[in-house]
Image (cartoon, rainbow, N blue to C red):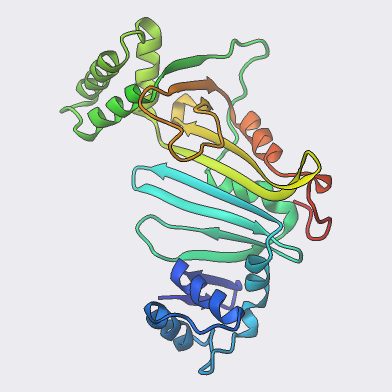
Amino acid sequence: MPSYDSSRARFRLADRHIAVLAHLLDGQTPPDELWESLTELRRIGLVGEEGELSPLLGELLGTLADPVVMIQVEITGAHGPVNHGVVVGRDAVISHDGWPGEEESEYVSIEPNTLVWELARKVNLHRGEKPEDGAPEVRFATTMAALDAAFVALEEPGPDDRATRDLVRQALTAADPGLEGQALEDFRDLVVSLNATWRITTTWDGEHDGERAAMVRALAVWDCGPLGHWIREQPEEPITPGQVGPDSALVLASSHAAEVWRKITDLLPDREELLSEEGPTP
């Protein structure tokens, strides 16, 4: 069920509720398959009997209808994929959070100058120890097929942690014989320690070669708990449908919270990169 919290001006809405509101905003009658969703919105007073929209929805719908920057946050953890995001409009910035297994997302207005903090919160980025100056960067290179084999092994873990690690090691060796020695052991440890993988994708209307074009920046990271953050360099973001297959290279580079923070900041376009200079500065 949709809901509205007046104390914090936040909404819980599913995609089907957003679809109803979009139809009504355009002066259209929602199709029959959205009738139940329309009834639910009427029940909590966000839509009137004649399809009139509550003034409470003004900031939310104005931002969603005319976005300047769209930011999508996709996180995959133990409970499966969850989608979050932020929409930067001309007069407001709307953040939305999903929840594993729940249909609705929570929508709330945030201050523009908290945008990077908000994205860091969504991916659970916390301050960690920075490596010593001059410390060598660590990289692992294998294939997506090897990673898939390791994940299959984790679906049926052994009777204890040691047995599970042995199963993952065997799966990696069978899928990628070139992954061996200490690199094999360390990569196995990363896979076993994996808390979540996440990707942030930022899109906006910009210019390329003097013409209007959709601009995209993205960052993909592994959160491996005590083993830290690892930036996925390959497959390189943004990924298009059908681009990645079993033979695609998988390259991970060691990182830390401060660097990940900088890379999240770099995803946001500068004001001069936007076609329109109106709206909050990300």
